[in-house]
Structures are given as C-alpha cells and as structure tokens.
Length: 406
Ligand code: AMP
Ligand code: MG
Image (cartoon, rainbow, N blue to C red; front, side):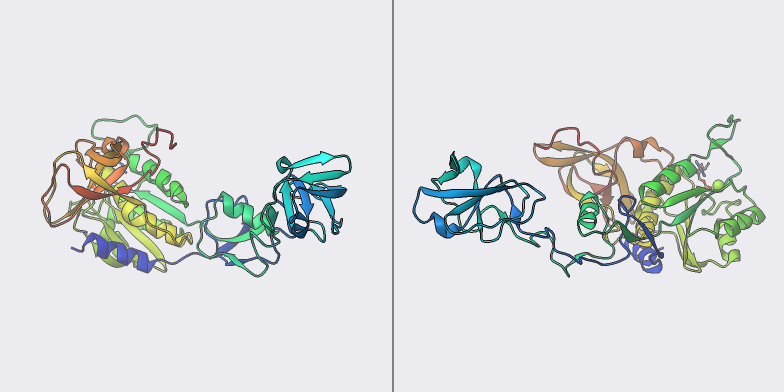
C-alpha cells in the first residue's frame, strides 16, 4: 500500500498536457494557455493623459502662479497639437500628450481666465502622464504557457491585438459506473437497487475541473461486460470508473483493466476514505478505478483525478488550495492511514475553525455536501485535538464567504 503523497506523485508524473487548439479570447477564459504570449506593440501605444487638465512644459511652472496661453484642446482619440514655451493645451483623460509637453496639471489645480490658464500649484515633472508602453512593452513576454486565462488575461490579449489564442484542449473524460445494483436517477428504485449517483457527481466534478465529462452506460458486474466497457472507455482522454475495485466476489475492475492492457501503477492507498483506489496508464491515458462508495469516489477524484485532469488541460497550477485551520473539536481517526475529514469551516475571531460534518461513513454523501473542506489527518496520529492546528484542502474556496470582505 502506498502513501497518499506517493500516489499523487505517480499520477501527476504519468499524465501530460494534451494538444493545443486556437480559440477566441473570450472562449479562452478559464482555460490554460498553450503558448507563451509576446506583445508586438506598446500598450498604451502613445503617452497619454491620466487626468482631465492641461498639458504643459514643466519648465514653465518654476514661477508660480504661472499664466499660460491655452492653444487648443485634446480629446481622447485625438492626435497632434504642440505646446511651446508659455503655452498649455487643455487635455482630457486618455488623450495623447502633445509634442513639447511633459506634464499634466489637474483641472482642479487650475483656473481658466479667457484664453489663459492660471496654475497655482506645480505637480512633479511628468505627473499625470501615462508613458507609452507603461502597461506592456513591445517584445515583452506577458503571459506564460500554462497560465489560466482569467478576465485580466483576456483583456491583456485584446489590448495587444490578439483576438485568438492557443489553449490546451480539454480532456474528454469517460465516466464508467459498475454495479448490478445501479439504476439511473429517473428510474424507479426496486428493493436492493441504488441510484448511480457517482456518475452524476463525477460528471459535475469533471466539468468543474475544466474537463468534458462523457457518461457511459452502466456496466454490470461480469468480467466480460466490464472489459467491454473499458474498451469503449478507451476512446476518451481519461477514464474514471467507480466500484468494483475491492476484494468482493463481483469486483472485476482490476481484472478488466489488466485484460485491456492497462499498466497498473498502484492499487490501494494508505488513506481513508478511498483505500481501494486503483490507478494505471494505457497509451498515455490515465485509468482511475475509483471506489464505489459515493464519498470515496468523490474524495479520490478531488485528490488524484482532478490534478491529473488539470495537468492534461495544460494548467501549471493543478492543486487545490489549502488553508491553515484550527480544529473546533476532537477528531478520532484511523491510525496508519491519512484521513481526509469532511469539515465545514467558519471564521471565528480571525481564525478559520474546522468542525466535522458528522458521520464520516464513506456512504454518507451529505458529509461532503455539508462542508467543503477536507482536513488532513496525518497517517501517524490517531486523534486530532480540539484547538490544535491542521491543514485543510478547500474544495470550494468560496464556501462560507457570506460576509462582505470590507
Ligand atoms: P463497490 O466498490 O462496487 O463494492 O461499491 C461499494 C458501495 O458503493 C456499494 O454500497 C455500492 O452500492 C455503492 N456504489 C457503487 N457504485 C455506485 C454508484 N455508481 N453510485 C452510487 N453508489 C455506488
Ligand atoms: Mg460494485
């Protein structure tokens, strides 16, 4: 049985980013860049005014108050104009600085007097002038490969004249549920049957991770059917199966993976929940044999499949964020296994306090829905004490952000 860190390292090491595709920059939002972006131009292209005011020569402001002759007016978008000694040009925010001028005096610090302007206070030389290339210089590498494209990046791309950009393809992820007992969400449930909630949970999780879920038909518990389902699943970029990885008499997932040629890298991780997790590779595709219990399959997805899919989708930042938390209560845990305790997190007196969401049974999916953090209980300890510090994985960094930040 390998440790959680070994398992994560194996998974991340084995997968690689997919190929690139060219998309419009708005569609690139939320995706990872497949190219380093360099600018072919200065932004702004010309020096311009940061204020409404008067463009002047700073040398004319040595004797105050200065009285300068207003020789024109420049609106945003205008070009041209010239300011000679003793002159000023009325200028609007964003308008190019006219030749000869080097400083803008805010309109609030001036008094118009016919075709003159009187300036009582001199700003520093160069004040209120946004230099050409102040934001981006021609030739600058402004965005690196692997960067997530957010709103600011979309705007930067637009400002350097890029309407299209190369992003990494989104992995198409097969979701394969195994189990004789499973029925779909809108089926009637006979005694002994269970709704295939995992397929829906995982499809949502895959989409949230930036990949494309494809739900396959349920595979019944026979070697032939499970193997056929894995053959079908192989047409996707990544494969997530659920169930059938334990040591039950009808658990065929490992055998089916072996038969289709999956190179098994591990089976069983020293963790709770999700100990029977199986992982292998075939022709560059990761195969995750997730456990069947709803909490186990989702926790294993978040811990291992999510970073793998993020790496395949080209992201440099592939891991979930964590936070330092204080435990709000004693928590018993399984010694020898790293435990991921489902917790809710509240802010109390400036600290983040984690409290368990109750039953930690791997069948209780509400334990995941009532809290959106996993407190990490180290393998070697058997109890986490109230008041002690721990690290928590934030599955939803916005959960609990009900208070305004300022
Ligand atoms: P297994 O790993 O196949 O032995 O399944 C473990 C437990 O998870 C059993 O109680 C199953 O009924 C349940 N389970 C397996 N697959 C699913 C699924 N797709 N959706 C919901 N529960 C499942
Ligand atoms: Mg099963």
